[in-house]
Image (cartoon, helix red, strand yellow):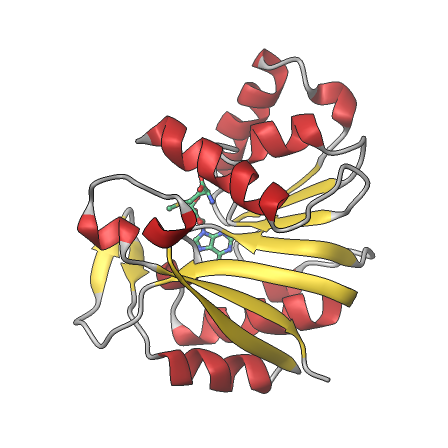
Length: 193
Ligand SMILES: C[S@@+](CC[C@H](N)C(=O)[O-])C[C@H]1O[C@@H](n2cnc3c(N)ncnc32)[C@H](O)[C@@H]1O
């Protein structure tokens, strides 16, 4: 499951057009499960990861060393509050894998504002979400929040962003045999025209 989720991330992003010289923002990068192959693929200095929990990102830094990838010089930020983070970089790709549904509404709004401010003209933000109106759950101290597509559209529109729905993760090649994972929905978010 862990390897499938690692492979899915780089496979999906490459199929979506990620090139080695692109700048990629990985929001909620965790221990770099998805980040390690992306850092290996991207040119030096192109990967930027943001993680709310410093101790989790420390694990990621360890993984980076163990994989001999420090020379790729990724920028890794431990940032519990993205609105307080200053990054002077425009991104071709922003990515949040299994992250937006762990955000309360205020945090989601701050994150979308950050994406809106940092996505380049032709940039694209991909994120998987849980569509529905289920009762809120809990995971490692974070909420598990399902929302309607309309609420994502409205939150994105408030930040100058437009949403298109790509379909289920399963349809995109994410096969974990866990219905609650494979049925999640991938969103493609771009700047509004
Ligand atoms: C399910 S994990 C996914 C990690 C990584 N994207 C991956 O696929 O391996 C969700 C991650 O998002 C992080 N996270 C949750 N809320 C966040 C926030 N507001 N800003 C940054 N990271 C956040 C969590 O600490 C956790 O590492």
